[in-house]
Image 1 (tube, rainbow, N blue to C red):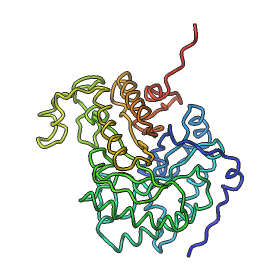
Image 2 (cartoon, rainbow, N blue to C red; image 1 turned 90 degrees about the horizontal axis):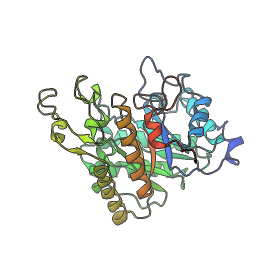
Image 3 (spheres, rainbow, N blue to C red; image 1 turned 120 degrees about the vertical axis):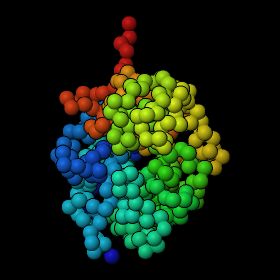
Length: 356
């Protein structure tokens, strides 16, 4: 059994208020999905950023973590990789912000289309090892207050939806050994999408919550994004608007071709959320729902980005769902290079009008 200390929680555990986890933000490319310009735990993100986030009105931060980097070859945790998160947790809790420790990647589980992995869902030996990893992480933070929540796995891509339910039970059991009442987020298969929600089977556990992601319609939110194979010269897509026909500009079997001619409206977004709310009411009426990612790539027009963001936020609020926007200072940023708020921020927190 590994022994760990928690040097940062002491001063804050008693004083920090319990956050509501209603209005959050993702810190992308800091402790996960790194690249040369943004290496792991680089100093572009620090305490002043947490202060700015709190000042805008956010009440929690979701930290995507590459769990593979926290795990050493002998099965122990790499303290040097954990320390930046631990420090960020202290900064957040000092300002009464909640924190979600999101395992963005785990050994054998990667949603990245260029390096997708799914062996974790079928390999029993690997499941045992990953459960042991989560067991150590859970023990490592067992003394943190309720302002810290765990997310078992980001955007799983199992071959069969039911495989995720089985994996969730294994990993949740490991966490519950040391954290019996901490809120733990579980999600749906295939990138945490709404479409696979019907196959989710939540454990009989009063402290689990449901997290889902929403980027619909992708032809708008990801327009000109290379990682989904959208060409840089595709037509500009507005919101509200109509999805263009990309025949001849994407490969013949590209999934985006199915959206040609679809109306892109706030009503269509609300219809998606109504379906989720109906499932929750029927299957899990007491479960908290959190839209853990939603956002628009910065190649879209700013006024459309603001309107889409506002529509999603309002649907979340209408149905009582918490949310965490993607992202802070990446390609979907709420804060630009000059430190100012973007159109996304305006859609989340509309400026207050002066009283005449």
